[in-house]
Length: 242
Image (cartoon, rainbow, N blue to C red; front, side, top):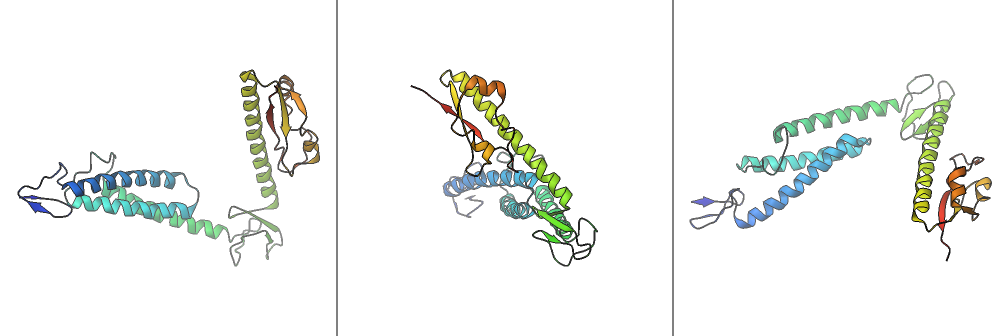
């Protein structure tokens, strides 16, 4: 006698799918497997790429939940191989998830301890440092960024590297836009748009009409004498004339 593997419904004339499920359970199963597969793939990607411990841990929990559900399907003798393509079994993936979670917890604990060690004298601090303060042992100023502790020199180097990276990104963005404007054949002039809190040297260029060929040839942006500690944030805007 035919019997559904999920709801247990049975009958002589009950039609079962190739998965051994009645029509109602088959629809639910297909949707459930599809959602679980998407969630599992998203969780694995985030666990592998995220730098946030809590985010990775939460995704491990979700991953374990979804794998537990799929393992329950397996216990009911439902074949999942055609729905889930993986080089390892679900049970192996579940064990790997547990191991990964334990490793993340260990990394987080080690990271928390680093937040209690002075970057100068390497002595233990009583509490986790959340904002800049002087070390009670050596008296040096401790800087904090993204939960990590730095010396003033290290912090300044970090800020300078971030500034250079940001300027490089903005420069590439501006050059790409100039090229697009040039190729359009419509834009003959551009104007420079500065931020509301830009330095005075950048603001001097605001609303100046510049031939696009000159902007490309002279690399006006970023402004060479910009004094903003974050670097020049100006950009080009096209001028379309009638």
